[in-house]
Length: 570
Image (cartoon, rainbow, N blue to C red; front, side, top):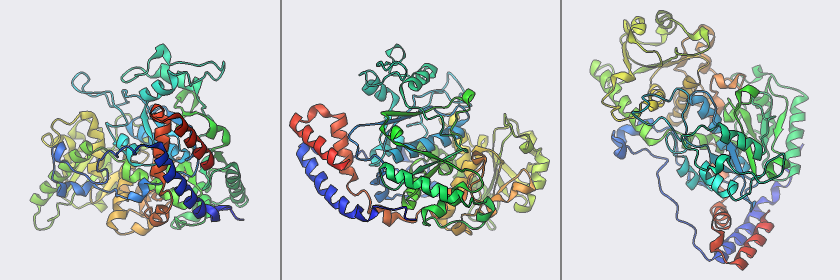
């Protein structure tokens, strides 16, 4: 079956479009706005209390790929009408929030919709030292550099909720789904930073298209490699073909499908033994001015999943682009990275001083031991049992960093009897003036640099550490990198799950409980192929910017010409 009908004309269409776009920019009579510069690809800690760039570079697992910045989704990229994606943050801990947000950002790019970031607010377990420091946080700039990502990437536009409400809601462009009347925000409020978001959430559900049937674990969201309804039908045909001989998970253990394999083969691995239907981004959703993804626990509506387990792309180049996009840009902000780099440097110095001959590199091992409010009781082991489960992989008297939510060091004595244990609390000087609500992220970053790492099964906190170790393994080409395995990464809770990362494992539910090699394995393939796509994207972005954001500065007849151009493109 041919699932790529119409692709042969793409290059010719690109050439024609490029000429038209160049003319359009001249017709508008203005120069594109200059790009805002911030080196997202590197890491400089000069403005964040050190360390030196030479020391800090150890933290860098991400890459600078300029051609990726130009890529725009083939779905809806040339629509003149600005459309939006809004979402509720997950109601759980930060790593659940992170997982959900990654999915939303990738969907916004794939749908060519402007991403509206939620207002800053309190987050579960991130409310330490109230009254002494900030406890309301923005996902846009407190933990990530999302605003800058939006500037750099042609295919992603990021705005605040306040800007969205001022631009669309207060101008009467949002309508109640029941009455059809223009609907304004509660009390006409546009700035919801630090305010109870419940009324805003209810308002957004009333004025947007909210797809409640998009449920992680029950369907797979699939995006075709071309725009148009006929291409979405191709995906349904592919799913029918897969269902006719539904694959089992066991078929792919230690047998990963090549990342550039035909779409049907990749789809087989993505759904193996689990998902039998697609969530289709249909014309109704494409035409919706605003699509809203809500989090409402009472209705069991929640996007607690990995983006790579919930979203499927017919184009393998686009699939790998999204995995690189998350790796390269949805990484913790420089302030957090630099604080972690200072701690890592201090631990290495400690380990080196304890054994200057046998450990000149200052290698250390690491744990994440989850206790606290964790609901998975089987992982709540006593320290002596943790020692018994892990001692074969660790060296006696080694320096070991422990990331943990457990208060009190006496619990760890069975481990301290064998190892030189250190905790984040031992590095007060390195963490001076750092908001203590960032310490969880710093714990993750430090633990990710351990020679050997033991994490907590079912923990999304541990999960992200494994993914970062996966990213590092690909960059450093460590043993097993080509298969996506992590030979020095384990779980401490039991024999069954201890060595999961020692072999290639395909996706399996519950997705959120761990990370999978498909998110980091061989994702730099296809960069050259993708670079040929979207070379005109900056011009496309500029025309959209002028028409939708700065209409008053464009003369009426020139705007008319632009509309004709966009009609041609769409």
